[in-house]
Image (cartoon, rainbow, N blue to C red; front, side):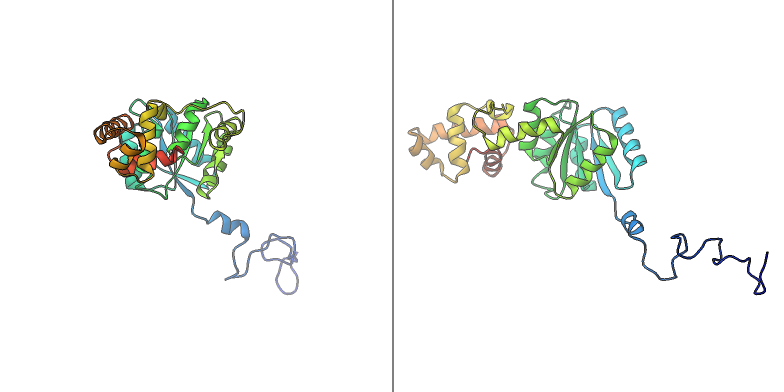
Length: 256
């Protein structure tokens, strides 16, 4: 039924009643908080995993359940990852730990110094302590296993992008044991560090502290030539190329 003024008898022009929360915003009115949140730029993500099927599934799943992340690239090998991440410069890299040509730690070794703003989150089937410690020491900001739910993975990505460290519950203890050096904690092995002899570690420790070769020789009661031999051996074993990289590598492993 219409009224004398030509309306249909309701208070709203679209069948809604003012005050019930469904009326349209006035022109020029600020967006509702939830609309502002949805307009935030999603976290850009780069996937690194040697299984193409997993990458395809992870990409589809992540982008279907949330607008908080956006996959901007992917790679199946260390070489592809280094090239792609350097080109795209994502906010977060989801990084597989084990790959045929070196794995996550190798990707981190090549990129950490060049791209300090890129955050790496390890995503692996492995929950072995040595894998966790190796990749965290290499520079990853967190480590989660592939048993994680899609929703929790999105949360983990957003958190590391915001500066938090994220670990699957059981894995956090490994990191505490390795870096806090709690009394009675079982030592965690580092495959890269374990390959050095005690004398090579001594030389590396002094080198990272800024000692010259002659000073190292004097401190350890060995010849300068022997120091040079040890440094060459350490460079070969760690696949590093200069003293600066060795110093940073030693500092990361708390040898200094």
